[in-house]
Length: 145
Figure: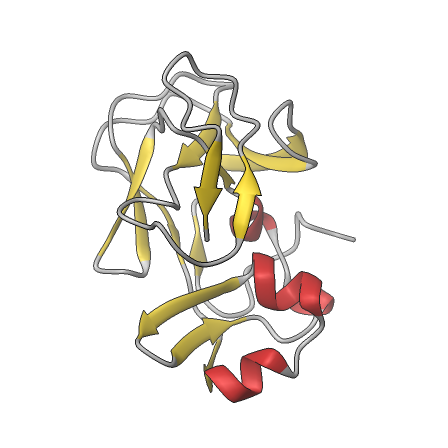
């Protein structure tokens, strides 16, 4: 999978790169120091219903869909559409945050080489139950997507 390619359905900062992550599979990393508030990604995709989401391959539906309104999702619909912004991993102590449901910004200054992470389970107690692998001292251990 060529995750270095240009973003198909949104925005990804040129100051990021994808490489192997100690958290999970691939991750997105800072290629230079990033300042708090700097935009690192903006998701795009296909606006689909929950019924359409259930028809996608499980790996795509569970990992690359973002609920933007109850019953409506912004999603990549094939692996060919994935790029480095789709590999931002969860952390219980993240250095980035999502604003306006579609934009990810640096929550604090991020050092060159640091993996960009976000708490994707904020305020969730239902959904797909997943064991967390962020390894932070304040890890929730179980998260819901």
